[in-house]
Image (tube, rainbow, N blue to C red):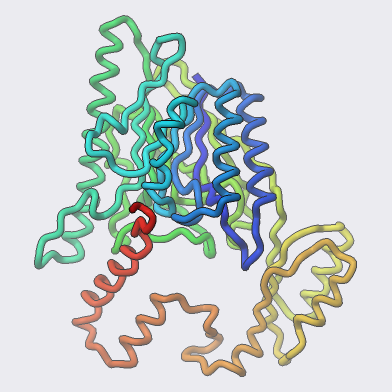
Length: 412
């Protein structure tokens, strides 16, 4: 049996205001063709299908059109779980209809854990058992008790994750034992998840958020039951195995989500099972839109632009000017330099002008360098909050921000 593992599509994502539907369309076309070329039997999508909980109509159209095309292909099964960016209720709403296309959707932790376990069959014979675990929210797996320390919260989160996978996999193990007694041996157990593992690699600007308050809530490979023959993970955008476990993998995002990922080779993972032994192969995803970051003096920037123009590049550019002279009309100068070019400037950071206009707190720091958490920290500084109070206030602040991100606003 051949299984293809992908995740973190983030359909609908923009890049500094530039819509990216052409890239998403090109990727889904490529994925459809790859499924046909590789004769894939099942497709796993490990979360963050959409970039927001309220995806645009065009993003939805891409998703449903793709599922219809795959249903008509050699691929017999599609399993989709929600990520932290997805709305659980939005993904779940059409799940009964999608079952008619052999598309299985799990938007949130289910009341009956059996609903997260699917048996993939061909000609009434079991081929694989899938434990489709979605992104597990804090409230799903941890009970809150007064007086808890941060370490207590993190320990309970990890324990909650571990228990959930143990319970779901126990159901899968029981099914496998029943199949074995009926004469069907060598049925692999494939699990899915959307989480942050200990030691996971990220890159700057990839938009990957901490899933739980407190980074200690990263889980290690030892959390997952040994009965899992392959674990398809989502959330981290860098393709990688988890620790020493080659069968526990992130496939990464299929297109670069920001300039931090611009030079990264994107991949999907093809798993072929001979009995319960996985043969794992990474398939490179083509680059559908070149992203180039240029940093340097005005001469450096002009030299790189000339080089790209000679290559007839159609790249989207992020340019950071770091020269010593203050240039007030940098945008006009660069637009003129790029005349008759197919390239687009998506962002310009003119550090010298920003330093002059904005009163900075630290050397070489601008508002572009601050996020909401940084501003909260500055507020603590401004009000001279004692160190002994800061940790608890920061945890409370992060929990509030996280609950706002995860609120399923369209559920009702």
